[in-house]
Length: 166
Image (tube, rainbow, N blue to C red; front, side, top):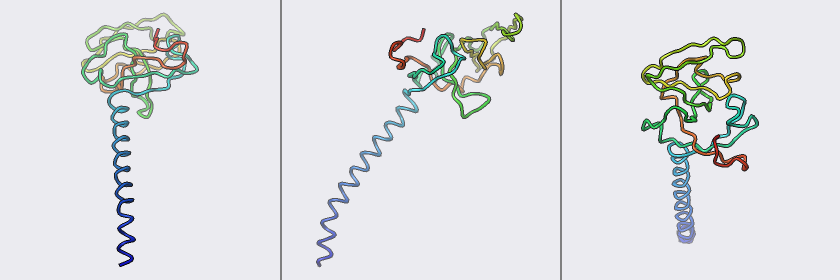
């Protein structure tokens, strides 16, 4: 009898703990959905997007809806799963959509030779703003539209250039 009363006391504690666990799980699920499907922050660094982005690093906000509904176009900064290393996400500028003719320098460091190509259906042409130090569509060709992970809409760090992507 004494054991049953002891278990009865713990029932309310266990119920409260379970309710709190469910609330935490719901919150974590909401965070996951927000980060994966709506909006996320990304640290971007390296020379390929100079002068638009800092070589030492910028924190950017990107949304994950536009590319799903076909609202990405030339001039947009996008996050792309690297076609050469699927574990990496790279930030590049869209220069051409399917059907567009794109003219680019083959090797801007060593020659002025230009090449023109037509972007095939279901693909985009991406390039870093710093053509002298960017590994992009000039190297691996047009990328499938499905590799686009998000569209950058705001810079949040460093504070002196908050919001601008110029």
